[in-house]
Amino acid sequence: MHIEPGVVDGAKLALSYATAAGAAAYTGKLAVDWLKERSLVSLAGATAASSLAVFFFFEVLPKFPVGVSEVHFILGSTLFLIFGALPAALGLAIGLLAQGLLFAPIDLPQYFMNVTTLLVPLFAVQALAKRIIAPHTAYVDLKYGQALALSTAYQGGVVTWVAFWALYGQGFGAENLMAIGTFGVAYMLVIIVEPLADLAVLAGAKAARNLERSGLLTPRLYSAA
Image (cartoon, rainbow, N blue to C red; front, top):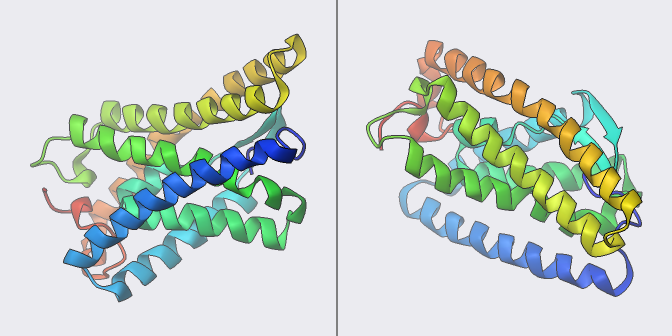
C-alpha cells in the first residue's frame, strides 16, 4: 500500500471516502459502457486476471520503504494496455483489498486513500492514451515514447496523490517535506522500468495472437479503435 498508518487519521479520513466515491462513480460509468459492448462473463474473467496480476505486483515484486510510503512496481499502465481501464481499475481495487485483508490489516483504514491514489492516475492514463495514440494504432504497436508517456503519467499521478495525502495529514513541516521528496525521487525509478515492461508484455501479446479470442484482454490490444 502507499499511505502509511498514521499519515492521515481521525476526521481527516472523511476526505478519502469522498475521493474514493468519485473514483467508484467513474468506474461505474466504465462498467455501464463495457456492458453495452461486452458480456459480464468477459468482465469477470478480465477482472480476475487483473486482480491476480496486481496481487503479484504487490506481494512478489520488490518493494522498498522510502520516505512517507513504499516504492512498488505497480505497472498501472501495463494493466491498462493489456486489460483496459475497467478491469485494470477493478483489479487494482480488489488486489489492494486482498493485500490488506490477508497480509496488512493495519493498512485497511488507509484503503480509500490508497485506492484513490491508484485509480485516479489510471483514469488519467486512459485520457492521455486517447490523445497520444492514433485511432488506427493497436496497443501492440506502441512505440517506446508512447509507453514512456503513459508510464510517466501513471507514476507521476501516484506520487502526486501520495504527496497530497502526506501534506493533508502532516502539514508542511521540513521533515515531512523531506520525506515526500525522498519518496518522489525514489519512485521515479519505476518510470525507468515500466515502459520496458510495457513493451515486453506487448511484444509477448503480439507473438501470442491466439489470446485475442480469450475474452480476457482489451480488444484495442490487437485492433484499431
